[in-house]
Image (cartoon, rainbow, N blue to C red; front, side, top):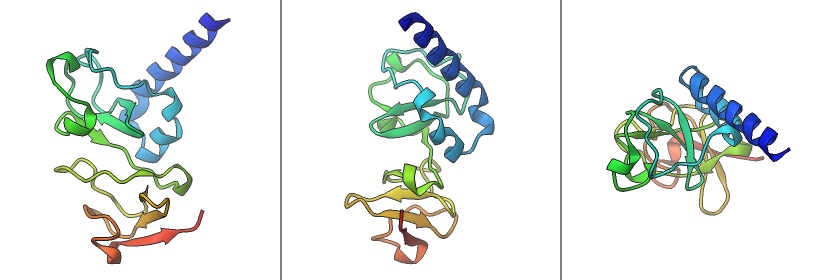
Length: 143
């Protein structure tokens, strides 16, 4: 029975990896249970750009296929290789992570959860600062 569940999980992960390039961050986060955990020893060279992994409470999207064993660090430290997915669903909002280049920039409607548990919805595209630093770009969301 365990082999059946493992096989189904692998099939879901492969399907998500193949479809991710055409999905929004919200759609990917809705299916994050199918995304594999980041593996610092894995060769991601054959993975398509946009393929998701989970790590440190976030969903990361592959920007540049690579062999992770050749790089020291996790996706949060390798922002030229991994981008950040955001969601418009306040119930699935992830903790704030600073933008780095174009990775992690918030677009209108996308949400994050601050350290106090408050969910914030972005009001303007291309937002790189959290609500505390740019309050005019955010509204708090009641869940």
